[in-house]
Image 1 (spheres, rainbow over the protein chains, first blue to last red):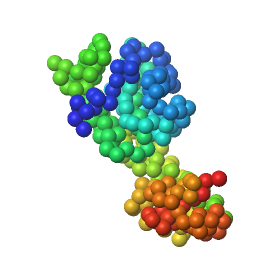
Image 2: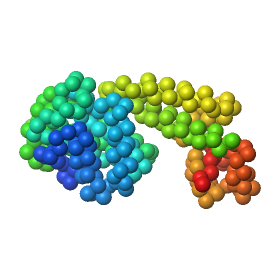
Image 3: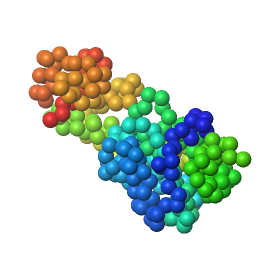
Image 4: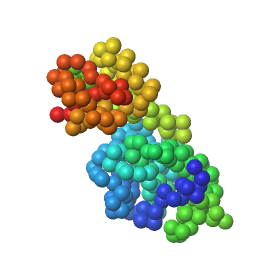
Length: 155
Length: 111
């Protein structure tokens, strides 16, 4: 998956900066609600339960201040991603024990024809593993700047 | 009797799908300390399922993501082919494991 294609999975309606959330649970709900408001998911409760189950298998806080809660659900018709940034770091039980400020929620249906879920997750992990990208994401002022970072043409 | 076995098999399939997904994201760098617990739960569930049924499931799993699928309105929800009336009636009797004549998937009837 190219970064251009990855950028196409986001939307301004699912861009939450700054977030109101102060806890891990609030992060999950705040990002999930962006999908709900856009009419992208059929059943909020089912998706939230799926996200909780996923977190119970191991936190999706991948360290370096980033968390990528994700999962598949029958209540999700297509692969889509929400982004949120918190002004204050939030404890997310991350792998390195450090709180997170950058949050990506990746949702997908159980089966997709073009298999974009895992490539999207992989691309995202690769992108946030670069410290320059994390720094840019922490500084992005608006959705246009954010998308430029995801596409890799922000400089 | 058969119905109970099929319920266990559906639960096993859900676990298998979950394990596969966790293994996929583990490769991407996500921490998944509870994967062992899932695999342990799978082993315990497997012990409760009859060996022939489990063997059929394993064989079908190599071909399909979902080897056991529900029947709705006399239609296999794996391949979406309508089942013959006689087979549909047999399935509701709860006396034998029924497979789809078209795709071979194990079938279970929703209440």
